[in-house]
Image (cartoon, rainbow, N blue to C red):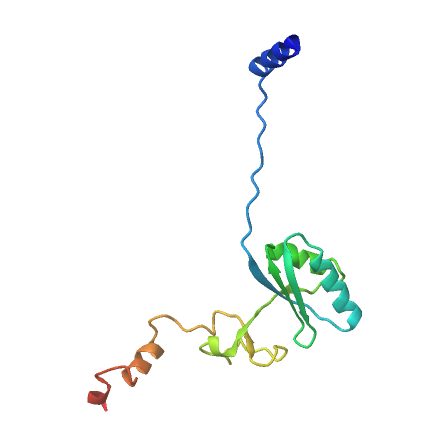
Length: 153
């Protein structure tokens, strides 16, 4: 036993090989929404089984009426999207809609979408209000929160 300890110590001291350990990034728990066309129970079951088998997926909800898959857990959105596309749904995309009330101009050219679920519009830059824009200044002139509003009227 003494000779083996001596040789292992000798080789480890003189022939040290650095081994890098690849650090894995920890993905925070999040909710990933995916838009995918779901026609029947078979499609719904196939998507749900594929996504729920992913490492880190805690819960999977499939809403066939809104064509929406919601995955909660320690998952990467790109990996979830690839997993859904691997089931044969090539037109799957990350959820492109925001609630109607979150957009300043819901009928802007890029925001209004006939295929959007009720109460939702598409995310777009044209629909967002410009910070410090003229609309905000004019609206604050006649606001109830503006103490000088009555002097203007």
